[in-house]
Image 1 (cartoon, rainbow, N blue to C red):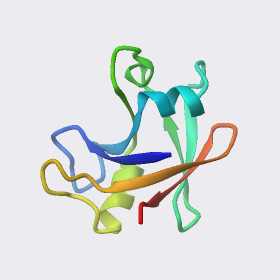
Image 2 (cartoon, helix red, strand yellow; image 1 turned 90 degrees about the vertical axis):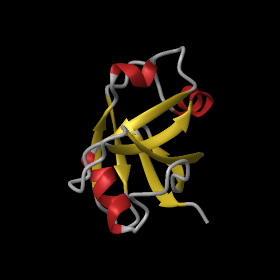
Image 3 (cartoon, rainbow, N blue to C red; image 1 turned 30 degrees about the vertical axis):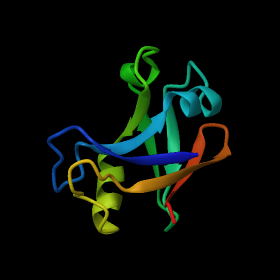
Image 4 (tube, helix red, strand yellow; image 1 turned 180 degrees about the vertical axis):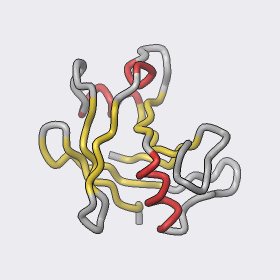
Length: 107
């Protein structure tokens, strides 16, 4: 699924404040209500457990965010963060199994 980088407006060099944004349609297609966390695997094999916040499941929002400082550290290490306003990095989030996804840069 197509995804993009996300930040809360105050991202930090520690990686805090960053995440991955997905569409509501992809959230509904690939994520199961009731899940409280998922595992994200980076291209180097590192894995991180990401908590799904209450806002992840809000029906009125057009997007959902997977938020974790480890995602931010990965984006920074890739040279993908910080990014110019309005130009977040494009990512691909791929299901690997129940509650498991890989993330890679798009393109």
